Structure formats: C-alpha cells, structure tokens
Image (cartoon, rainbow, N blue to C red; front, top):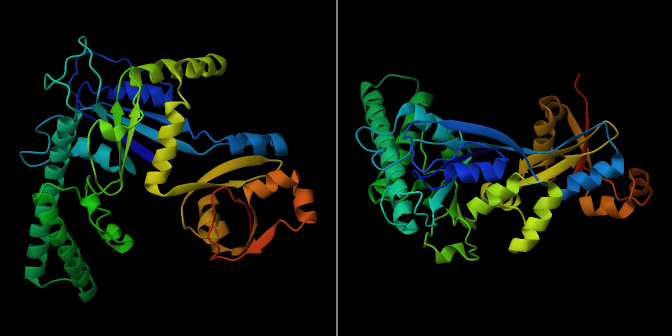
Length: 364
C-alpha cells in the first residue's frame, strides 16, 4: 500500500511525514517550491503480530508495511495551463490513496501562502487544481478516442473497448466541469480498470488530515465541512506527533499519557487508511515465520493464496483456516486441532480480518 502525502506549501506536510515515519527530514518556514519526494516504508502496528510471534517463537517476524511518499511541489495554479507537470503527476498517481494535509494551526514563524488560516479555503484550492488536472486529461483522451473511432480502423474488440472508455469519460467530464472530484461518482471495478492507464487523481480515495500543530481537536468535522465519497477526515497534532515519533517506547508512553493522546498518530492514520481502502489483515504462522499480509475486504481464499505467492493460487486445493481469537483461546496449534477449531475452506471462502491461513496446494 502506497499513501501519497500532498498539501499546500507550509501546511506541515513534512512534519506529518516525519511523525508517521519517524523520519528526520528538515522542515522549513518557507517552501522551496521545488518538486521533491521523500519516501519511507513503515511497519503497520498490529498487536496481534506480537502475540502470535510470542506464541510461535519463529525465526522471523514480518509485519505488513505501508509506503509513505511526501510529495512537494503542489500550489495554486499547478492544474492550469495544460495540466499538471508530468513528473509530479506520476508521483501522485502511483499512490493507492492520498493523504491531504491541511493547515489548521497558527504560527507567526511559519507564514501562510494565503496570509490567513482557513482550512476550508485551502482544501478548495488544492481540490480545484487536482480537478482541473483531471479535466485536461479527460478532454485530451476524449479527443484521441474520437479521432481513432473516426478513422474506422482497429479490430471490433478494440473499437468496442474505445467506445466503452468514451462513454465513461463522457460521464466524467461534466462531473469535473462542475468542480466535483471523480471519487463522488459510483464507479464499478470494471470501469476502474478502464481508467487504470489514465493519470486521474481525484478518483483516488482521500484522507484529509488537519494539522492542528499542538492543539488537540476531537472532531475534525468542526474544522471544515468536507462531504465526499471515499473520503475521511482526521485531525493530528503534527508538532507533538513529530516529537513523539523520535522518543523511546517508554518515553512515548509517558508522553501520550501526559497529553491525553489515546494512541500515536501513526496507528490512527494507518487504521483509517485501511478502512478508506477497504483493506484488512490475515496471518501465516509457523516455526520459520509469523507474517501479516494485507488483502482487500471481501477477498477470497484463493486471493489470499495469490497474495502469498502466485504458485499457491495456481495450485490451490484448500485453505486451512482458524480465526485469530480462536487461536489465542486454544494457545497452541495442537490444541486447536484437538478441539476441531481448524477448518478447511475452498477457493470461494471470504477471508475475515485476522484469519490465520495455511494453504494446501499442488503445482505439477
């Protein structure tokens, strides 16, 4: 899973990146305006991995990971005059979801590019730029499709694919012209596949993160109203969370208690990201390795097998499954077998969050 961190200059984007990744990228009171991308892999916090590792005492314990990309270079005007810069756009569209950092803190030492603090306005500024970028892409692609269909070349299958794409983009265009993001539309999985090679940004799920500096805010919706599909709101004390990320576990626990923070921002943001993208975890366990895997909610056992290795999906026979809670209750795999807690499931079994799977397969 890749999360692209975007935001206007001086929104505290790099502060949030440091808080989420325990990074030490220098923050500045003034934006350079240059395209810069900082990347870090972060282990997904999950207490279940620790408990399973203590239970099985494996040679290796591997957690699921999230890649955060801190993307600088976004400002008013980037979506105009022919669309967004190709290099910048490429960095954004590689992300599975966007984390949009919006400034909601006041600091005389960090001037705001719009001079005043107004989260709703800042949200609208960057939204407009991203919508304009998508509109340019949609219009250009429609022109190309029209030219291709006019030539009357290509196979029937190719022409049918172009016609379907044309109809979909014709539905996208008025949405963008109305200043609305594409993620507000009902778009099927098959339609999403059609758009896969187009660098559309507003189609991506988005977590709007209000950076409140050192101010605690329990209801992010009170900062600005922002009602869209595939969108979540959160508030994070960026300055405090960055300090917290640099501390030892013991000092961090004391710090959380002192400031009344229920959990580190990293844990909360990753949990929200999983919800936003419709993802969940399943586990594989044994003496060699305890490992957490990420899979979409609603995926089947054969999909889980393919997540582990393509050969397991190709030669899938059955999945031996036990729920995490049941595994903990039994204490050992031997006890789980003794009490009949392990069950065999076929390809169509819908994997549940926390399932522990062992795949039976045969590849000749």
